[in-house]
Image (tube, rainbow, N blue to C red; front, side, top):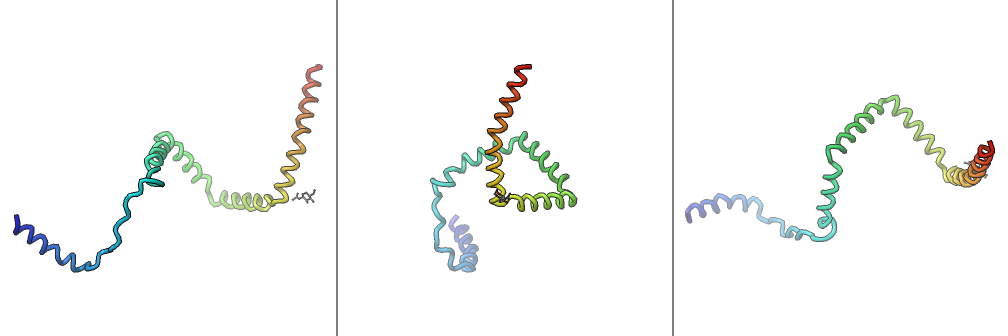
Length: 121
Ligand SMILES: *[C@@H]1O[C@H](CO)[C@@H](O)[C@H](O)[C@H]1NC(C)=O
């Protein structure tokens, strides 16, 4: 027993010499708060997310997306996104918001008017 232990330390010695200065900084103690504490619930959420049903749906979506992303469609999408980007200036968004705000009571009035007209028929 003693001899084998001695042989083992002799065999391990070159390993210790090869790395004479092991990292003096101890590994940080496991954190029981923060992310580590949330890990179980995160993992359970991920597990829920990765149900067979979700995976099947994701496969369908990814498969569909892959088919959509032909080089022709990518060009079209780039055009659309480029135009949308050009359209969505602060000024445009502000004007459109105003327009929608102005149109809402109008639509309500027209709706009431139509309701009255249809009610008298
Ligand atoms: C927003 O409305 C202002 C004032 O009516 C107008 O001068 C401007 O051209 C509009 N801008 C856009 C992007 O529609």
